[in-house]
Image 1 (cartoon, rainbow, N blue to C red):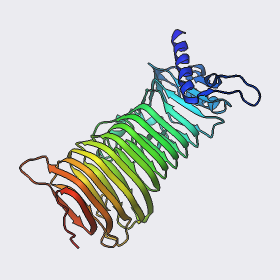
Image 2: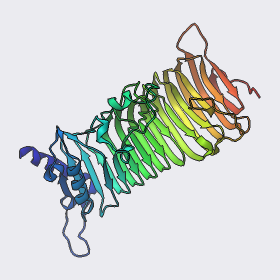
Image 3: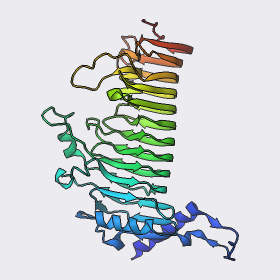
Image 4: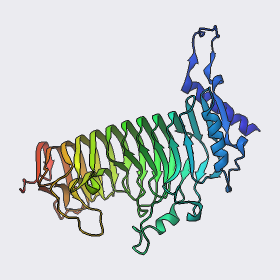
Length: 416
């Protein structure tokens, strides 16, 4: 009982800061009072959750959400600290009648066995759909329990067919979304995906999975606008942050990445599709031992554009490919055919980037003959080979670029 009281008091204190204080009486003559008293708290244990890591708590979480979402008052759903909640696929749907907060203080744990997933649900583990005014926080953990999924991935062994695996957290069509102070670990596939969302803030997340885990991107962003990602540490087996089609006005700042595949825009334009990415700033990233650093990748045959992109203030620590633009990307078991059309890449700035390259090719600009990259700028770049006996180099193909300040290795000459 005492612990429940403490959780309740802490929640009221938190809501005090979140929702503020009514300074003046309302039009009906309400006196000054703490608006936190208007917030309703929904503890999942009141809805039958066990929190022992063995019993299925999916229905309890869904019931708590449904009641909180229908509340006329700002609502807080609490998943208490010190417990593990076994959770199968669940969808938290909106819009809700008021703002809503999910306080993950304990651990949400996915079932490890593939038999717990159906073909209809194996793309998502926890899905937030159409929620407006959502905050997810609490200092707890979201554990995807993905090891058995990784072992049966076609990228682990060609003996296995390529199948969909669940994304741990998916935010679809959400607005005014804030994610803060959470640990995501060992996702079955992507750790977190932001899709068709607007006005999103992602702050102080820790995302971890082994460097060998396949397709375990940290944060995936697509078809979303006005997104800020700040102060996150990401260690995965794929892109730390992947940025895809119809992303605009994205700001990424103060990220530590590695192991992983770096910060990637794309891939864009696969299967002849049209893609649009605009106004992306990546500022203040430290990369340790990643396969790529600042990367833009597009398929031949695609259409559209990736433009107005800034990568700046980055430190590369033994990164295999520190700076890459690749308009000839091909992630296929068979060679990709050469095609004339491409996603146009333009107005890209690489500024204040320094550190060590694990390969001789520190800068690679591999662009399309039909749609060359243009407006590419390198400013104050210093990349050295980790092996002191060698010298880092850069290569270019069909890239129209300029340099400012000191750039080392010196930009390559235009080959065509």
